[in-house]
Amino acid sequence: MPKQIVGGFPMADHWIRVHPALPAPPHKWTRSLRTRVIPTSEFLRVIAVTDEVAANQILRELQSGTSFFELAAKYSTDPSAPNGGYIGEAQLKDLDPVLAASAKVLRYGEVSPVLSTSGKFMILGRMPVDFRYRAVELEREAGVLRTKVDLRGALEKYQAAVRLYPAFLRALILIAQVEEQLGNTNRAFELLEYTGRLYPSDATVQFNLGIAYGMKGANEASVAAYRRAIDLEPEFMPAYLNLGLLFFSIDRISPAAMVLRTGLDVDPISAPMYYGLALAEQKLGHAADARRAMALAEKIDPEFVKEQQAK
Image (cartoon, rainbow, N blue to C red; front, top):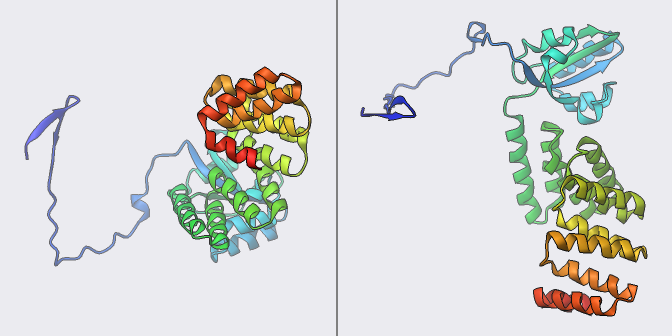
């Protein structure tokens, strides 16, 4: 086959011929083929209990096919229990030596025997190599069901995605949205609070938490969440708008106007922001500024202004 030099390396295309009438049997894995490379980090989950008999019973249930997520949530005393035992990517050098020694020989999707360390009996599980990909596929399937207004079917798919990948941020937020659509407001709020603890540095999480607190009437918590979202992502326009409107709704007009003006410095063509500013300026007695803001809102999006004024 013709060769060409790519980045200093000689490259060539090759055809591999396979006879269609000679089926190749599936390859059988043997221990001799196992990699000898010791990983430096792994995505892990853990179950920790204080009773050895209980640990061995849990291991038997795992070996019989019971979900690691379910058993960890039910029995584990580790802080990761609400996550189904998921502890994310762990550097093996930072683990307890007993756990590290076991983790380094785990294959993808495999669980350890019961390990005794620091007065606890623990079982480690290494996540399957494709766990995030499989979770994304389930999330896509859930999205299709949601467009068909099959909310319960979508919720089951989203939940299955989170069981596969317990730190799946987008799926967690979407579960909260569906729970809210189904009327399970308290459950949606709990999920958003949990997600906020899991991802304290994510602006979208803090924004959604601000909405949830606002719906519950926890105004100061809502203000704090919106401010965190803005601190984390200074160009996050919806946070400025929601915070400004929240201030306006609780009669804190000067802060409302200040936040909306700051938001307009970031996005000077936002009709909702100008409309909100016009209302704030009017209430502050700044008639000329109110007219100017309203005129800009009408110029940018006259239909939006008509809809708001018709309410």
